Length: 405
Image (cartoon, rainbow, N blue to C red; front, side, top):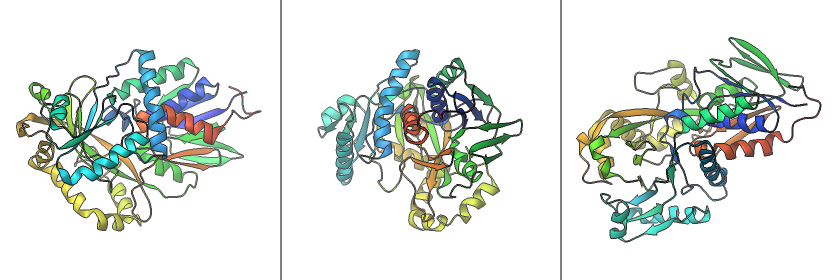
């Protein structure tokens, strides 16, 4: 006897959960509204396997990132997928950033980031990244890059091989709790599950409302835009070069990343998107925008962070401003080196009623429905560990006497 489990969302976290549940014998169905998996956050990120430098020690992010990094590496080795430990430098450009850099170093050590090291010798800094400018850095030599969309597809193959089902083009439009089970409706299907796990990313608060969950946290979409470094200039960057992040925001700032296929992209920024799936300024949703403006946390957030918002929007619209941010780290960079906008991703950032941006992962439970309410970066890195955590803490063993497969 196995549980009938529905998973809403075909990003890497949803498919990782489906894979773990299928492996333990559950009858799993993934419902994804798009025509392919990894359409949104999973397929629009920088591909970094985070080592855990930034996260508050003891937080879910810190714990699950550490475990997830190992699991992702092992999965890539098992499946023959690319996994490149290119390394990463978090660079203090001047002395004003040294205190914040020291905090990154402290967290890295407490989080057990392997072989992390503080570098105060500029000559040593230039050995790692010959073109970088800075006075000090934290070096994480084992930070890696992968192709998360390919990883998700490989996980999906495991789901299908174990008897699970993945339905594309199935957007969930309603859910109802019925006698301890969950009825899930899409335009083309209707199913009753013993349990449902919602991994809906940008739509997670919308789906949560179907089962009467607390409206908070709400999703505020932030778009991150990338520029591509000209192929003949990719030698300016050997690995990854990151700024010291502003602790007030859950964003890392514009950085340089050598990808798994050897391209180098610069970004992302963080601008409020005008639609949940607004990948450029022309994609605008009146409904999404009005809902965000009406949220109680909207004005407190705007009042506190309006300067940051103006700076980010200006950098999005005016290339020279974006270029100046990047050039702080590589003085040899030319504006013409940023050849074209490589693309953009939209981050599903959860925020509360008081305007606070939630930093840690957030999981909620309504009867037999488990809801991932906040799963931003490093969720892709942590995906396999998130799946194990959700199963251990919210699902437990398959229920005796449930419907058979």
